[in-house]
Image (cartoon, rainbow, N blue to C red; front, side, top):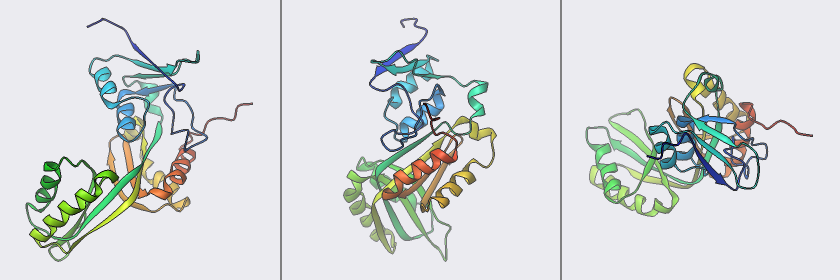
Length: 246
């Protein structure tokens, strides 16, 4: 409506970083990032920009420059995809530490079981994130999902009720899990990125509990206590560590 060419957002940091500097001392400022990458990072735990802000900018192809109120540094430019941006496999590492995992054991493997579980949660306004269903074994399967720690008690009670109704064998919860994600549009054209992530996690002795992917991200659910180790291991493995400045 204003006919502006770009939007500048001033904050207390220099821009968008490759990881949370509070967790990763070698995090570096990103010079350029695509709308899609920024959307993923915001949804996965990065706090610099809200998802709605990036969504509006992307819908109107309005570049955003994130910069500090207290510095002349040019900050980070968030814009549409371009060739040079796609050459980088992984743009950044995002994480969350306040997640919980719920597993419904030995659910009867027949139509409607998944709908019963998640309809109950939806009616209670409980958001779920990562969902994994195992391969059926003798007509039974396990269904796991993650949710916010604050919703764990309600989720456990509701899912336990459904488990009894459908004849599942029980519900298990883990109230201390986190998520670590790698994000980058370059993943679409570079094979082996996920394998490199899993190898870095193995080398850091971080156990992976669940995995979910999209075209430009891979997310692993891990024990919350391992989050800092995982973020730093992945940051180094994908060459994101800031150069030493003398």
